[in-house]
Length: 349
Image 1 (cartoon, helix red, strand yellow):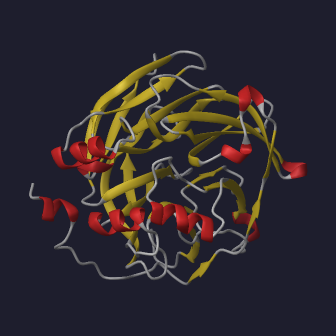
Image 2 (cartoon, rainbow, N blue to C red):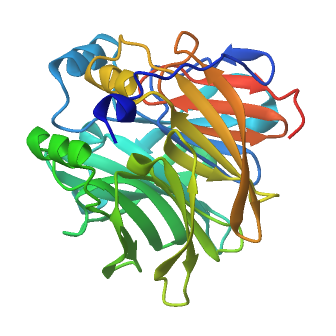
Image 3 (tube, helix red, strand yellow):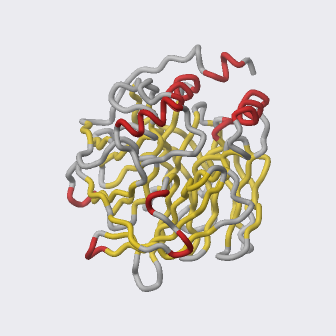
């Protein structure tokens, strides 16, 4: 594939929205990933950063006071507003001042408490997955545990499978720019999906190319992985021993970021980046706009059957959409380092 084609220099899209959209109040720039529970409470990660960011991005983050935060949004209030949660506890050496959250996944434990797993890019080339418990009366996240293993390379997203087990994706093998460029231009499938049972780690899927978001069907039988570099969603059957076996590869013709599963239908919501070169310009310097796109993928019997584009913006309204969900006919859209939007869904789904 020619580089100019891979980077999307030839592409053009037409802007459209599913209804009226408004900016979310109470949140700064950045809302990289969400987890929404069945009661409509949504936890949002903000302040995504890795240690080898460009000088332009570092300056941008300092200028806009972009640091690691987790916000709470309530779909039931039907208001475009969030609250920042305070983070307490330091189990295993966790330091909130070094917290750079990325992917997030939640689990309702046996006692009915909400547990969150969050990817944390804490040190140069050293990622963790942090476990928190939500304390609703104090609007706090209590740090419970941290996970670290040499299978964690450049971790992107996490999917809980119990209150102490999860899958996670490695989107890269190292932070050295040379090898990142080699992989991208050579289109090398060096990335993996890993399963952790709470203490042991095993690679359950490999030969992936820039593995990004991961999500699990409501019945726990299928796992969906955004194989971003190949512009596809990999559907994997989950075995009793938690191994994953590819059963479908579905092309989306865009660069998929995070995946959220609809709680009622099992359909998928994808935040996506349709034009690669514009995304790379944004990653280098967030003042550059890149398009935002939201896809809904219809699922039947665990397989994806068709695609609908719910939202497209050229980057003026929202730049670099990374995640989206529809809940109670409202669409919430997050971004890597830009605004967060809330839209009415007045079109049939």
